[in-house]
View 1 (tube, rainbow, N blue to C red):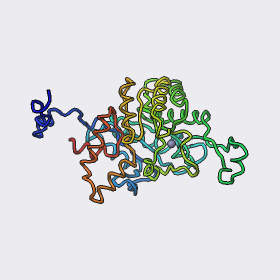
View 2 (cartoon, helix red, strand yellow):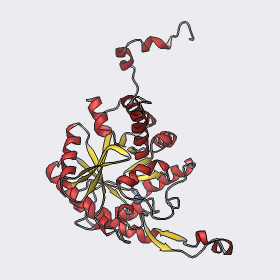
View 3 (cartoon, rainbow, N blue to C red):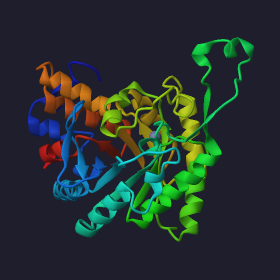
View 4 (cartoon, rainbow, N blue to C red):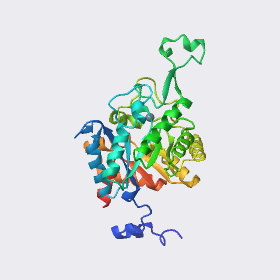
Length: 341
Ligand SMILES: [Zn+2]
């Protein structure tokens, strides 16, 4: 039945009518708030490229977690800025590492918050890569070797990295982390972490795998926030090519086979197609990470008066939800929760 019998605008006439037929509702309990924890006390240092996002010392992180929880946001995910870095990421797995300290303090003061631990090594490695780095022999033959520009060939060693990731995950859970979220993109890390957790007696700790994590320019501001920019090269040998959809499906499938309880797509807005397809294909909780660059773009445009900040913030979040993510990691967790509350 077409026009004039059918008139789509009938159901759009009033705010109440529109609300009645709304298909996608955001609630604060879908949000996870990322937090960057740093050494010191009383520190609340704004990240330049992410206005409104801070590096927080442990005491401030506790306050922040309490505030997040009071707004109806159930969960925070912790990233750490260690006081020193090395080539084996000691700060990631040390019992007194910065994330471990924060986890203990938050669990003590705000016990009902769901604490997620980002499991990766880049923030703790002097070179800023997500795994162990070793110099690699030239693989492309004499033509490449002859070029001085590529003479410092290196490799991110997969299998040896798994051991450090596993140690990191176990140490985080010992400190009170409720859900471990490996973000490194090494092959086999989910299985290695699952085995390590089980062996340590943490059979009940779920794994949220950053399963489809793309090598994205949208991570730029995060690298300032977490001081984790690679000192040389880039992450394309382990993170995914933004052009590859089918490979993303394979990555998710493999992480589930390895024992992931939940999976994530990252970034969110440029990969809504991947989120939507993953929702249809895999019957597990699906998360999406609205990353630093997605946040920074909205903030920058809003500051210039080019867009309506709140409106665009909510539109971006609802689009991620509509695509199929039931869990959204977002720097807007608090602001969006306030608007929804
Ligand atoms: Zn990393």
